[in-house]
Length: 161
Image (cartoon, rainbow, N blue to C red; front, side, top):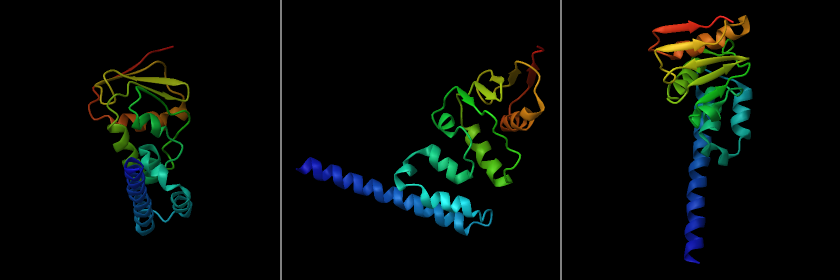
């Protein structure tokens, strides 16, 4: 009986912390001068408080960027697939937050943008980046954004097809 009581008490405490995290995000976004986005507020409101234990969900809500491979970033997967994600429509504060999150992804070795593979020899902050082929125009904004995260780039190599 004591073990069950301890488990239920622990669950209640964790639930309260997650509920408070949700409330704090909502209030922070609601009072923020950077965004009065009703859809984001609705998304925060409709997200179950249990989901606030997932860092990838929290990053989605903090940044307002929902079509990004946050789970791969959080789990430090060596490969992320950005598919057709494009940073063009993001506000400066969103770009800063996404940039900071990617910059912490120390194990990133390969990123896919559309059908292009970009290799970061030695991780995201590699001093050399290799593109397997020249970029198509729809890839340029995303790849440029990835390059902007890297503060140690010395060499960019584009292999001709």
